[in-house]
Length: 164
Image (cartoon, rainbow, N blue to C red; front, side, top):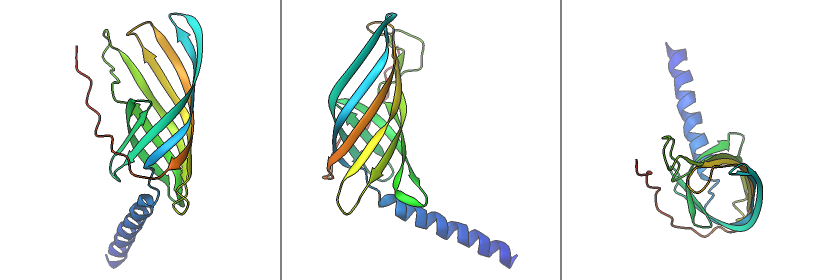
């Protein structure tokens, strides 16, 4: 019985320690870079690359991003052994899974690395997006950003898409 309690206490302490380390890798700030997308628009191949600005509000338990005014919710997954490294999952705020006139959206997986002492960081990864609003579009986008400022950013929460 004593051995079980000690093991459980160890798990609780380790969990709290990892939570504290995860908080050390704050992603807040302004990032610059590019988003390159390749896919099809109404069956026609399309490639786009844009110089972009990424704003990140990291509230610890919430993560909100905006790329050139397009808003996303995120979830952070710090690497347990190296909390300054990890991944984030993102989903565009207006993503709608209901097969209707506004079906579509975007979701993805991004790798992130930050340096708390310098405020610098890198963020890169892939998102997949689909839309039927203007034309039938499906594409894969590659993000590549460097943090230029760790100053806090206020974006506010995503709002759920309005059902048709």
